[in-house]
Each structure stands twice: as C-alpha cells, then as structure tokens.
Image (cartoon, rainbow, N blue to C red; front, side, top):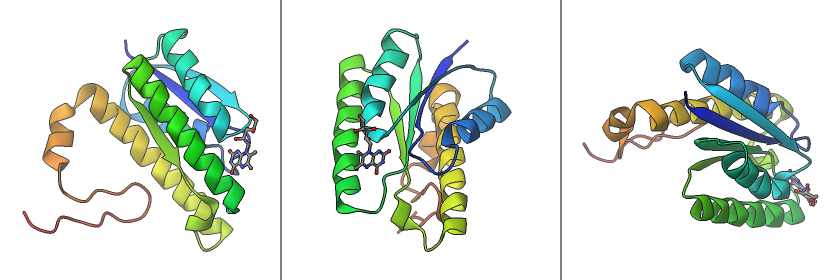
Length: 154
Ligand SMILES: Cc1nc2c(=O)[nH]c(=O)nc-2n(C[C@H](O)[C@H](O)[C@H](O)CO)c1C
C-alpha cells in the first residue's frame, strides 16, 4: 500500500493537514503519516524525514505564508528547501502554500485554503494511481483553489 506523508504547520490559520487527510481517505486506500512543525521553514526537513525515515512514497507540504515581506521571504526560502528535498530524495513533494493575502477576507482565505488543499490531495492520488488522467489534463490551465483558467487552444 502506498504511504503518503503530510507535513503541515501550526502557523497556518486552517488545519490544512486534517483537510488533506480527509480528501486522501475519500479518494484512495492509503497509509498516511503526519508530521506537524511550527512553520513553513521547518517543512523541508519534515518532508525529508517523512520520505527517508518514515518510508513515504510522496509528501504533501502544507503551509500558510503570512502577508508581510518577511513572510514572503520565508516562503521563498521554504520553497527552495522543499525543492532541494525533492531532488535529494528523488521523490515528489507537492507544495501547497496559500499566502494569507491571496484572499480578500478571512472567509475567502478559509475557503481557498480548503479548496487548494483538497485539489492538491486529488493531484497526489492522480500521481500515484492515475497518471493517464493527468496526461488528459495536460495544457488545460488547471488551477488549485480559484477557478481553472482554461486552455488557450485545444
Ligand atoms: C517570519 C515568519 N513567517 C512565517 C510565515 O509566514 N509562515 C510560516 O509558516 N512560518 C513563518 N515563520 C516561522 C518559520 O517558518 C519557522 O517555523 C521558524 O523560523 C522556526 O524554525 C516566520 C519566522
């Protein structure tokens, strides 16, 4: 059975890990290992541990960068660490970041965080079990969270 790692943060204002696990369980029979850390800069090593020590086949890294310039810098640094962890382990880490200022108010932020988390959890199921489905969606302007933007041409 495939094992999926869930790395999430206490900084986030929504329980993204719980949502991801709920979506994964709805879509497939999987083993799940969760690792919660304080913030996004702690995610790269959590993901690496989930892969190398906990035997996860793929990981979802969930986080909420705040709206200040320092938070944006943290997000960039965290992303670079997550990419490095993917290259070192040769394993996908699907980064699900929702920036606090992407939404116009708290209600929209909560909605966006849930939507993006669920849609990326579905992507993880596709990566593990339905590669052909992803190929059918290639070039179709898919987005996670807000509406898909669509293809420019068929
Ligand atoms: C400035 C800052 N901003 C964020 C953020 O926007 N989102 C987040 O999840 N975490 C932030 N952190 C915390 C760091 O990611 C990290 O948890 C601490 O530096 C401890 O290693 C920090 C320090």
